[in-house]
Length: 454
Image (cartoon, rainbow, N blue to C red; front, side, top):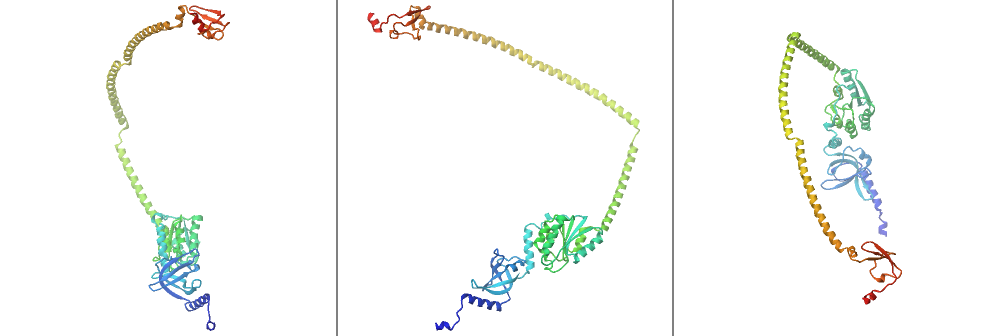
């Protein structure tokens, strides 16, 4: 116990805190370069990654506030230069670099962000020539989105006043650099599309550094230009400057002054053009009138005396009538001959003759039918007579004719076949060969008694 009493014993948390203080005091700001691996971007908005080289690796974190100002997208395998401070994540006992600024190694962050956004929007077809709208030749009203105090608006108005002094210009003033500039530019473009009656838009600003022009490299501005129903001319910076807005616009002007030159033809040039066209039209009309006069003169020279012309036409009519009468006569003769031939053919093939022939055949068939029916009737009569004779031979009535009779009980009509069916007092109806008679049973003898008597 005395051995431990001489030493200061620290908890893990205390030791981690001491190490953290030492690192943060001695490595308050460092620059580190390395290759990105293990990149993670959770919903918190923080960015976690590992910087590594051939011999070691260092965990890094870029907190959400700093990550929002990052202009490019980090990918695994990218080489970065990172500025930050060394600290300790006490819960895991890991030391890490808390990054405050990052840029790609070998290329600036803004340049990389420009290339990444350009590649992505081009892949969506945002820069395709097929979607670009034509710039109107003579706009009635021009909309401008730029700073109200910059050189761009001054240059645009000066050129427009020189080229077409009475053209109407509407300006929506916006910030053209710094925080919030891109949102203002995009909002102004949308406002022109919603509320302003303009035929074409000029969107731009004067020259500057890549950072100064960056608002025109923002995605929100590119999408606002691409979705505009009004044709857009992009006029950003100097001729050597190139932005995402230039790619998304329907027409790129190298400078704001050039945009004013492109947006409308000079009134003097138009006046000269109109005068030239007027002169050409006058010459063409004069030539046309001269040609028509010449043709009229030739027609007048060729025109003959109307009376002679009418007489010649009358003579021609008489000739045509004569030819027509002759042609009609020959045609009627041919048709008459053909009609006679057709009538003869019809007579030979007349339906009446066919009907007469059919009627004769029908009469023969009717006579043959009647003969066949008569023969069949005779045959049936003979057969009936034979069968009638056979039936008479077997008929009970024939038996009656030989002196026999049939006895029926009157009360129920039962045909009596045996004395067992009779009782004294029964009334019988006797059917004879001719007529019938009623009788009363007075005595009944059994069948056996009759046979015995016999």
